[in-house]
Image (cartoon, rainbow, N blue to C red; front, side, top):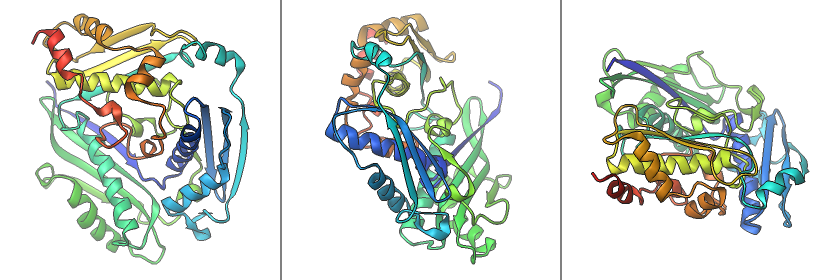
Length: 380
């Protein structure tokens, strides 16, 4: 195989787009906690001093949207008007309407809430069965949030980004070519101090030493200053970090975001299901890489297609893998909801640091409990 490079990025929970993802999912969680059958399609926009929530929600319960927004901003760390948005004083505007009755006709009988295609991916290059660049990118920004919230580096503010470029040789991660870390900070801190602190306390803590060599480029706050950030520096919108949410640009993406959508929306439930299936295929040993794709028609329960791409690593024919999947898994919206137990208030945590590769409570699509069944059906 040829040598190549893969670049992936991640962002902190204080990034303006991620604020919006988290608000949308926090509202979803609040509704599912009271009404597991509630229908939610919630969008958020964040700008200086204001959060705007809109969408279609059908439920019999009441949730305090302004209270949810303020609690989330406080938890993330936006507690000072000088940061451009303050949990205590920002404006919260809500424009919610009911879901279209035309769409509900199809969903009420178990059909998909929309048309589209969804993809799930897995690779054996990491223990999480995820691409290495996105795994490390997420770890960097989680560590960045940790040193901020624990006051190890008290001059940091909530916004931040990471980006990693990994060189692959013979199809496997070989070395780190470039590591970029950008962290919002107090205006009185010198860039030299930020560079030294983040290199020691974040980058060297997260990136394995064996991946770094004398040619690895490490860039910290490349412009030299990152004081203006969050919604003050950039307007945020739900669903603009779909590659951060998934596989870091590896594999395909159907284009639909996840946050703010209840599990009747196949953008979310089918993406979780295909990740679950792809991960179990790789865990079974049938192949080293797998991308599972499905497509749906609005109002129709069964997928219009199921395909598998093993990237030449499969031990059996891909059409046989598809036959196994059709036998073992139910890809209807209700089947996916039941299998993964998706009518729970578990979604705010998914909205930052990736929806996949997280073997934590609630991430049912990360279980490998079907690997043995796939292996038996494959006869390997």
